[in-house]
Length: 225
Image (cartoon, helix red, strand yellow):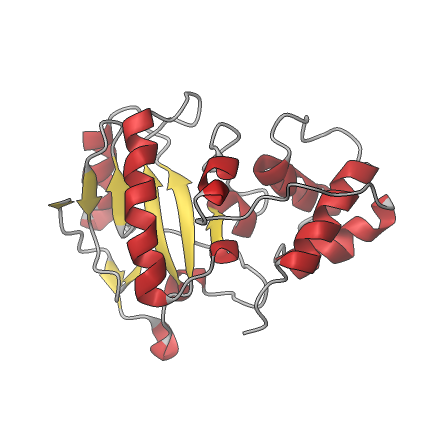
């Protein structure tokens, strides 16, 4: 763990405490450049941590403070995601696999965060989950199943096909919010980024999507808070 304090933060609004983690990729090839950007006042962006490909973990903003990583979007009833989350940036372009030391470091970092703030695995999400259409990180190369095996995320292991007409309601119970200007296809794309990354995002909604969503919604409905 190394420190690189970012000035881009503020108090969590309304006395909020973090109850979720949002994972990102930096979309930059150079981890030093991405860290410099997250710490530049003119950037007006930040995260609590950046993890480099070699496994170095940089602490940028104290966990108790509100970092500026999530932006516009929502997860279930939470609109101000920044005030309710810890943001972790993985130094990666989004076009290459994540380095093994980097994922090892993430798996070492997450349990402490989750324990300190009593964050359950279902509230470890991707930027693409809460910022529909606008963001795709941590992307289709990120191994959510591996995190789930360690109790640091969720992954459905068994499901039955379901009526595609039920998908929208199940996705809403999971936490996907169809906000202003968004379309049902945006929800499906985000869902597949997370749970069916091997399927083209523009392929028609099918019974497998609906079955996966139904199981996730049943086992891990979004917190109504």
